[in-house]
Length: 415
Image (cartoon, rainbow, N blue to C red):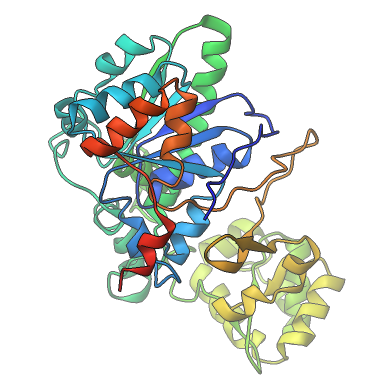
């Protein structure tokens, strides 16, 4: 297999170089978004590789799980043993002309590896140094390890599910990881803008726990916002057991209605036009105060017609509604087909894939080239050469075990 060559990318972040030490989801999502918009992302992996290579499902090749493919496009991989003095030195050399460094282990691990902010800033004074961590470092949880379910549980997400449905459950996708990754992109973008104006680098910490607590409490602090409290925490609409996709006579529909112009057509379709004058339901505030009764009316009323009937009716009356999808039907959604959301790509070793187009658009355009998710250490030689290592120096690093280069034929020998 030939190494993937990285042509100059286009996009808002063209010319920005990111040294990415992250793994699994939170960090790779962050750097994938940066890469999708033109940044050059160099994925630095240990000899064991990103654990996400193995956690995300069964792939066609070892270490190329489906989820990994979706989170690591438009990146190149270099394999360095950072415990080896020469591997560590090679990373510092890569950092000399980098703009951003990302990581997602505990800060004390970075310090033990001599990759703290002070260590990295000594090599690159204006570096944007972004750590995605479990917990803020000023609290008692600072040293705890964290994965997505730990944070969903500790930040109240699972408790919200219990409040609504009677038992605690995790949202069945890595909500805390993905929230943290998106916020890290925002922080990095702001830091780059600040550096453009001031010349200053920045150390950023994005704690998963505090960020998820922010998301939960801005929604549900509710009457506990006031001191003294005016009532209980929790938005009663969102923790209501009927706050679900609506069951129709033959299936489900995704629907909500808040304003009178949205709600009153529903009352007509339910055969209950008199509710438009009922003081319990004739305004947003009244329906909010009687949310349990209002939701029960909706539950019963939606059963009167089919899903297709409701979708047509809601469209005619501008009531917010859309198809309810399973995972399988979402893949075949006609709107996603219209916008070209799922694109077929040819991966050099994994064959034809369904890839997800970046959801957001920019008038200036986005990255035009596409790099397939790399094998572990697939571009090690290439990246070292770009950093100024001679051919002899590269071979010495490989021979010592400080660096490793992917061999296509090695995959054939693995089970």
